[in-house]
Length: 157
Image (tube, rainbow, N blue to C red):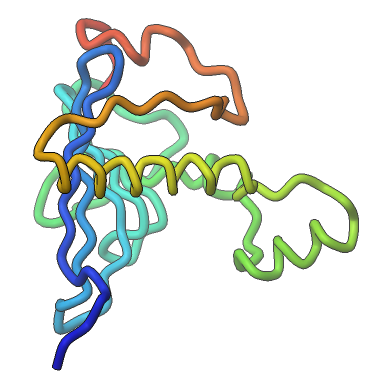
């Protein structure tokens, strides 16, 4: 059977400050997995992994007001329940419907989704040409980020 759907994709993204990200999408897995894992010099952040909505693994320092857990067999892992309780328990669809009814801006805005598509189509262009694709975008994050997060020598994860 032939399909036009990409069932296994890996994209390497290099950010302006020199950081790299690997984005993988794989449809051929025998089980459902929808998680995000961010690896850093001082620890790991996992979203929706192993039954936890958020886990922070670090041996640098304890996370205040967080439950200490063993995650994937590793010690020094924390579930910051306070941070999670600040998030809405609504589903993505319920949130979107609420925004339509109230006129609020959705967390997953159209501008954010356009940015995601800019990255995806840039990856296709790079694959077609065999060259790096330099992405320029007008997307601005929904909150002001500390510039130190983009410095690869800083103390961020």
